[in-house]
Length: 379
Image (cartoon, rainbow, N blue to C red; front, side, top):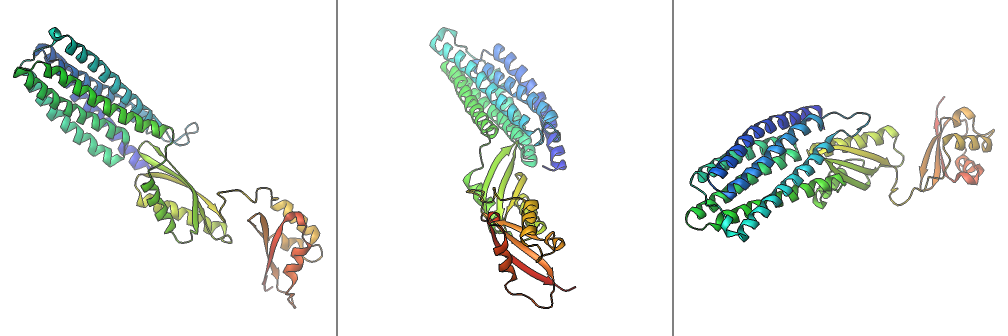
């Protein structure tokens, strides 16, 4: 994630959390006070919902301070998972709050003498809560979309849930005032059920991110399509994905022509990375592994010797035929469990057509030398 987006996300988290905290503190105080004054169990429950929203605003503020810090030695991938962890905690707080509301409302329904008869002031408080929380939802969701923050999006939905719960309170209290006293308690149960659903959805989504659940199949398909369109990419394999704080991280092996230079293969990989991040704004980083062949099933070349040992053995076998200085500049290709050698020799007076095959036959069998290719250059 680039520095500008990190700074924008941090600022958005700080601003929306402070505004949300002020509004929710006011609503919490008002709902609880007028819930007691107006004898509305549903409004008291809604006040606890606002209190939960106030706690989440404080969590967002805390996450803004720590989750957007740059990567360091102990956290090479950054601190984005702090935001994810707080999203889990936020969801749990909501579900625990809802459980308390449901317990109390259910108890009152079983004991009719404890039911509260609300007054008309409750309707005005509920209407004010609907308007305030709907405004907070749009304000926070706009910031979430601009900064691609899952935590801000979660907090926006908490504001929307509070608006919806206030609508339920409004209906329940209105029904109680019309002579149906049970409706206030039923409204409290409905509010609690909504809170449980929202809390569970946010918690489960964040937990899936913490255990590195991959992207959806349609998103993977779109990513593959972009990679295949890049010139020089023959195929791909071992595509892996995961999420971190609203962004996606991609790892992929791409296969290029086996005889390309290292720099050209690297350039193709860089181009794939650039195209993916241009086409998919949610992708925060891409790790490209360049392969000369498909190594998805097994690494056939793992037991082959490294360059020093190969050249040492060839120098002995080709002594008197190939000069050590020329051999030192040879290009080695490790492909399909065998080695190919490219030699650049001084142009001789007479070219020996069979020299490459003779050199291959002279090489030790243990080297698994498949091919020797010779090119000549003028003095």
